[in-house]
Length: 117
Image (cartoon, rainbow, N blue to C red; front, side, top):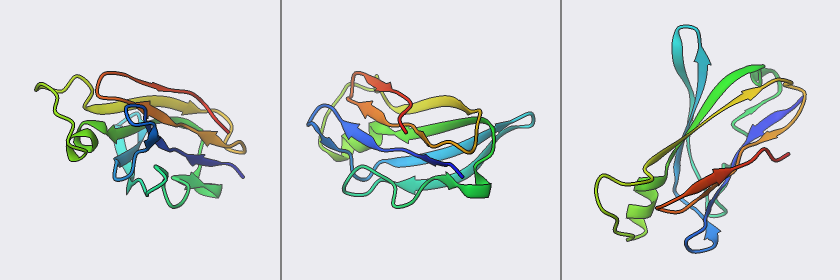
């Protein structure tokens, strides 16, 4: 069975982003449903997969990262409203037998992602 995982890298400092609040939502016909709310550890990762085994289903999902709050906690001052604040990554899981790793590389001014394994 597959799993869903993520991690956050602060590309401003070149270090893992510890303390980032992440929400995982399932996107359903009735709207969004919150599945998990976690905080990244000292390695910028979650302590366990966001979904694994029978809990990982084919479908549409969103990861919402509290990047703006993270940078504020790091003492980085940016004009308000923040240019990068809550980063929402919408993605699909086609085959729940596979691993889906959805990392976030982020600064106060830019972000990127990719599908890892």
